[in-house]
Image (tube, rainbow, N blue to C red; front, side, top):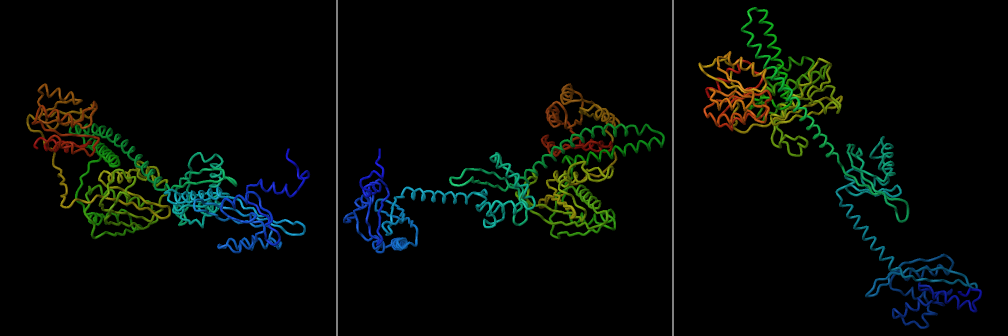
Length: 640
């Protein structure tokens, strides 16, 4: 058992033994600054470093040695120790390097004082802190590397500690605020969320309590006032000294969200287009049966009253055909007649019509680019589109207002067409109609191009006007854009593709009387819908043709193989069973190379070029059609 201090024969011996047991290099100075006691560690250090001190330095003037040192540290230590001997300083602490050629070392000096026999004494303890200093240097270098890495991150990063906040450069860019403006988490919520700060704090507190299980999507306001969508991911970890610390990672996803929204809208519009196209196809077949039977009935009627009623029925059926045309316009499946188009001239020609249609309370101003390039589009459809937009503008300004029509050349790059799946970068002719009406909130504006969507009263509109414009532009290789805000008005911009240099305008055939069949001419008709087939057979016979009918491609080919006479194959394009009209025509021409071909379809698309695979120019007759149109196309095909 260790001997206690009271049992020690000599207290000085006990004190020296205690000092020798310590690893620090300890010396005791008297009131004059001379060394009176050293421990074993002090003596060993001197011997290890080649210091030849008589009596291990006992009696040496420590203060004078410090004063003689070459570096300022020695003089600073001497000054501090003199203050302690004078009773003006309670303690002294200094860290200093003590490097040798083959080793880097650091020491810490701690000095305290005590009274003995009425005199002040100083206890000096030199402790080797090399391991701690090396760890501090390594930590500082690691922190420096981490700081440089965080600064170079493309994502925003913030470090939160006890309410204090520090940002990297990317976070400054995302928020628009400098680090000096967002120094606390309270700054973050107050500046970025404004009057929504408390709700944001609540969402943050809930996510933090759960350990940030998933990223939050937050809507912030940048310093310049612009709203941004930011993906916010947090991580909480325990600090070594105080509390918990957090790291926030931020990504500006504003453009990604906008792109996703445009893509969803485009997909929705495409789905609606496919649906409306299918409805139009079926409706065209119904109209074919109605119009065909009415036309064949007309010669049988003797009374004027009966003929009048039949004429009204035909007019109603033709109106239904126009409705399917509107549906097909939205579905981008209508038959177009693109021509080289001077858009400025077309607008000037419409000027008087617009003024009469819009009324005196609507002023029209034109800003037409004199250097406008020629567009390539169907002029009738462009006129319809402009009239539709003008009428919409009129309806949005019941008390009067201003309609501005502006044309200019435009070049759209890939970055301008994000979310526009079918649009291609390049040169366009742009025409914008801008009104000063009530405008539309975002929820209404994003649905404006949908068919049958309307904000008008029941019976005041079909909701097909803007959808026709949208579909026509898409089918023509252009695009339509709408910008609207409540209280500001609405602007709709149409982008039409420019024409190729030297491109000629398409020629349109003029209407002529319905020609009759030549003696003996025979037609093989292929139509899967029995109602349409019966009507078409009756019309062909009315025109003087001999007719053979088939409900499918297989039946038609079997008839040809059996030697049934046929001068012309009149076939629907879309048929059940997997074989299209194009497939049937190829197989039929393989049997009879001189056979003429005329196609028809109630579901028109842009595949009219398919007829070129037949090695000849074959016509395509769009349903529903009148008897005169059928007769003309038959003659054209037979005489080609």
